[in-house]
Length: 146
Image 1 (tube, rainbow, N blue to C red):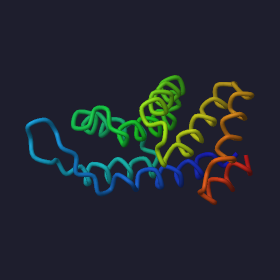
Image 2 (tube, one colour):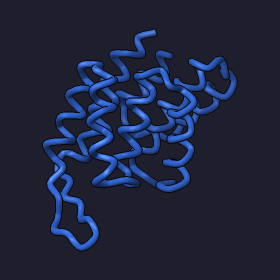
Image 3 (cartoon, rainbow, N blue to C red):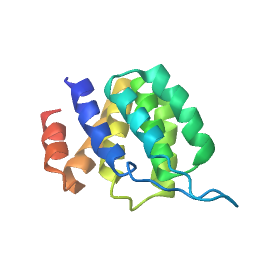
Image 4 (cartoon, one colour):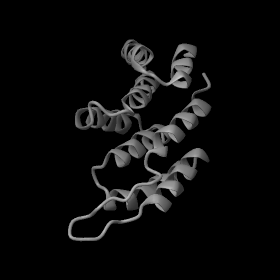
């Protein structure tokens, strides 16, 4: 399984949406998180999971419950092989952002995480849903390869 190269491609796609983030914190002017976002994305691409997790701690303080924070958590926990936390974050993400345009990519991580924890039937069900619902031809190709 070429999951690490596939993983990197998917993370890059998921994280692109955050590259122009200008979140607002309570009673403060907008905070530019684009440099931190790019730093985390770079660390993920380099598979420097511990460093990415450390940078994420800062990001979580600025945007504790944002969609991008949850996407980073899913990616990093998957990369750290902390599958229980990855799965918990996916479930929370899907509950909080049920119609997100990134839903298919999050389900892809979920399916792979379930597979890594020997929940094969559930993994296949989620990967089948990704195949059925994604509009991303690259993701569809990856899922069909698996």
